[in-house]
Structure formats: C-alpha cells, structure tokens
Image 1: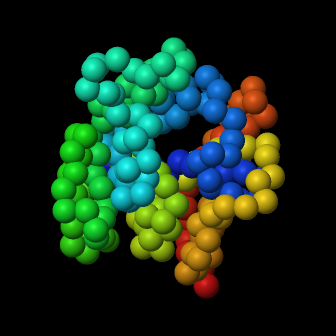
Image 2: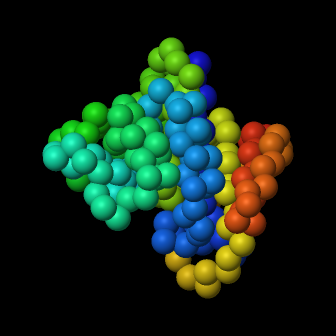
Length: 188
C-alpha cells in the first residue's frame, strides 16, 4: 500500500495561508524532494486551481520571467506530476489530472492500494477530511518563523484529537523547521 503524505507550510500561530512563509531556494528544493517521493498528487479544487495557475508550464514552453532559475526544478516536478482532484463542482480537469468522484474514503483507499512510492496531499480543506478519516500516513509541517495573525488554521475543525509521533526534523537556513510525524491513535 502506498502511503499518503501531507506536507504544508504553517506559521507559528497555525496559519496555512500560502502567501505566508519564506519562499527561498532551500524551501523549494525541500518541497520538490517531497514531491519526487510521490507517484501522484492529491488536491482539492482550490489547491489544484492555485497550483495550476502558478506552476503549469505555459503553452509557449517557456517559464514566466517572474520565476527564478531555482524555482524551475519545483515547477517542473509539480507540472509533470500525475494529479488527482477531489471536487464536487468541477466536471473536468486536465494538466495530467483526473477527477476523484464518489465516496472520498473509498476513493482514496483505492488510490493508496495502487502500487507505488506514495501520494502527496496539500492544501487545507481536503487534508482535514482525510485526517478525520484516518487516511494520512505521514504529516510534515514546515513551521515558518512568522506570526501571521490571520488566515486558515492548520487542521481547524478536526473532529477528534490526533496524536502524532515525531520521526524527523530538519532545520532550514531561513529559520523554518520541517517536522515529520506519523499518526498514533486517535482519541476523543
């Protein structure tokens, strides 16, 4: 069974707004390496559309001028990845993607049973639903040395407490710390 891994940037006060954080070369390399450990990406509609807008290679075949050279390996990794999109509002997707329909738990279990290295999930809403279903096999929180004071909060609304065991820690030059956890038992 291939594992489902969740990785997200989060500020010290729990904000998961993609505009908060330190988008430097080291962080992009870190996330590109995470994506390379996955056979496919699993996104909700909002994250899929946001990622497509930022990281889909233009039809010209040339990356936009705003993209620094050190961003290109991340962009190429995400652009070329197989993607699954969970959405009740989209009727079609492209960009190496297919829609996930029907019961979320059953659909994700099916994807996990396929052979491969793993699945990577990002975003805020979909990972909350997957955590509630006990389907996430590894969590990585890249804690940014920032207090945002606003925005969506990490796993806000989780139905039951989730106990995690720290299995890895990596300090980045920016002051961010990547913390990897495996889920333990879920308790009330």
